[in-house]
Image 1 (cartoon, rainbow, N blue to C red):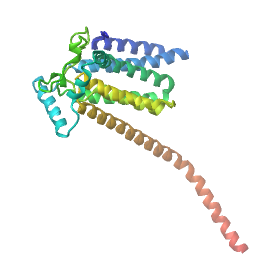
Image 2 (spheres, rainbow, N blue to C red; image 1 turned 180 degrees about the vertical axis):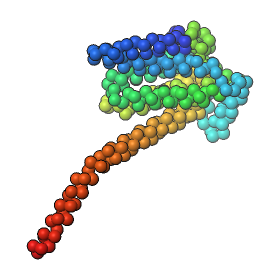
Image 3 (cartoon, rainbow, N blue to C red; image 1 turned 180 degrees about the horizontal axis):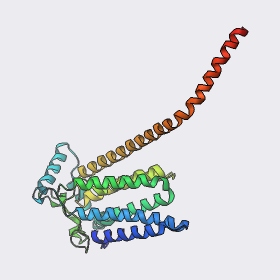
Image 4 (cartoon, helix red, strand yellow; image 1 turned 45 degrees about the vertical axis):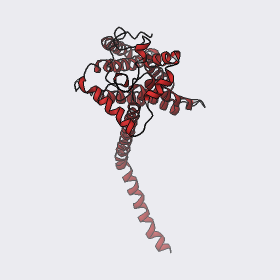
Length: 297
């Protein structure tokens, strides 16, 4: 089992150390140190986001007593609209222990590693696009955490859905069994795993020039399968994450359009007074020439 021994306190301290090192390196005139300072700042931001995610799991706006009822409501709503049963999907995989254990590991640690790898790739290969990707990640994660302050029990905690907690069955649970990783078990809605996977896929499709880039869309689909088979999320958790990510990207695009419009208007205001005298002299010159033409005619 992957040992995630980074608590939110350790992540926060690591982020603070990186910020301090980045501030010191930024004062250097050496290009490599300046570049390293930028990388350290971004790493500190990601660690800070991880610390926030870890810490937020211990806070809820409502008591945990209603978490199971809210989870049951989601389950019933899926049945009303005739969505596929998560129980049926899980039971198709249960006879294959190696597949189930692989999906447990996938759920436990791969999502964060892939996000980090994606951020490093964008930072190194597509530096100008990095701020946009990083901001989208931060906005989506913060939005998801705010929603998760209202606790919702995952499918594995519902007594009537017939789903097994596969991580407990195979001794791979990250909840309370791994030192330092105290993730909240009542944060099913929305699925941060799905949101991060979908963001990574969209970034790869947009920025990569490889003809294989469309295969990245299989990553959020596989993540959706993993969270369902392991009974950690409902279908609607993934749908809610996709909608939240779409809203995040729409807000980003609108904000960029507003900034661009403000720059254009500012440039027009600055250029306006400089051009008017030139236009005035040109019109005056034309006014002087026209009478000459009439007299000549």
